[in-house]
Length: 617
Ligand code: F6R
View: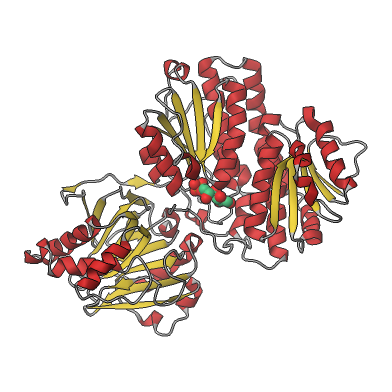
């Protein structure tokens, strides 16, 4: 939610800032803006709409400042318009600020500032920040300091002390034209180290083409960034050093590489993502191992139950994970939505293991749910795709999917990698506990190794899916049906369709249909059935037969031979171990949503009202 970029060096900042914003647009695309310093004056250019709009503003390419901050917005407070776009300035135009997050007490702060004579131009929560900085710079305890940088940093700190909520903030001022000050709490911010120049961004991919060396700012940590040096300070402004992290991602990973959309590219990257996620975590004939964690048998034996907590697609991966863990490890496992879990006083203690899944590692509800479990004495394990993301820094254990950057708002390769990783985790636990026989695990490993090739096979034959998409893209409602894991994956297929095609859809456990939803089935309605569990074929066919009788048009995704069935379309996928089938059966549904969205002429990568990485509640 909201993207932040910053640059300080010898080059013109504007092209670098615009380029960074373009690659961060998936975080928000309601409005965009930049501020640079030129001849001791802050120049701000901003407008509502996409970054392309900003790029076309008169005079933007004439900005020559070599220090700048920039922002692409996902509106929370105040509609998308020029006034509400970032950067925001204080009344004296001395401080320019961009902000990602939400200031919960901004009304109170605004009233305080108004009582001191400040005026406001926007409806945003952010505008209080530059004015508070100005207030402390001129009136607060730091106003007596002589050194301008110390005074600048001190006033940012005083302002931040007043804020309640979440924030990643960049501040520039002509008072110190050779520095950018940043601070974060519960919102991501990274600093990329260059030679004689430094970069700032809310996400690594935005600046990956310039550097592979990153500082990952911690909560309540400040950094003063000049072109040659980055200095770090804790919340009481005591300076400290910070290790640099080398990020291995290929910079091409953040490009479309000839694909029309990131989503399509990421769908096609799934074989590689699964191969990388398996990596060296197991080989046939050897036990599973994780470089990143070492969990003892004593600890696993002391676990009474497991919670898997996440949001959206990651939660759907968790549903598949539940079956994998219960099946292989025999530990009762509950899946919960993070925003619910955190407010319902779950029964957890030191005998509970809580697993948190988050592609971005920055989802506000998931992080809060993790902190809650820690406070109750449970051990926490994070599954994330982003190295050093907030969730990984909070959790007791972290394991990474190696899907590479996921840019499209609709998650695809992250989902299949998350499911693959939980499968490996479940096998790892089962081998430690001895809770499954060796043959079961060996068979599963054999099937996992074959998954990438099987995904390739599905991707080699997208035409039938495209054809079906063309037939149904004008529809208003659709249904997805499945049983057990096929139901879990139906939920994910339905979510994909909703978010990028804006077609209303519902997923139901096929056996549940008769208990109400079947009333919605009428002539011509499309029902998508998933049938991959050999033990449930007959029952699933019967349920689909019931909707056919009521006039539904059916598409079935299956790895079984279906005799005596009357489906309109059948997409055959390769067979695999039923526990792994979601990794294959989701692919046709991802493609179907993608092509429907394309036929409707929609922006697949940036669906309306959404943003990647939900850093607000
Ligand atoms: C849907 C989608 C979202 C995310 C959810 C959690 O395609 O991408 O539902 O899965 O917002 O995000 P992460 O995994 O970053 O915590």
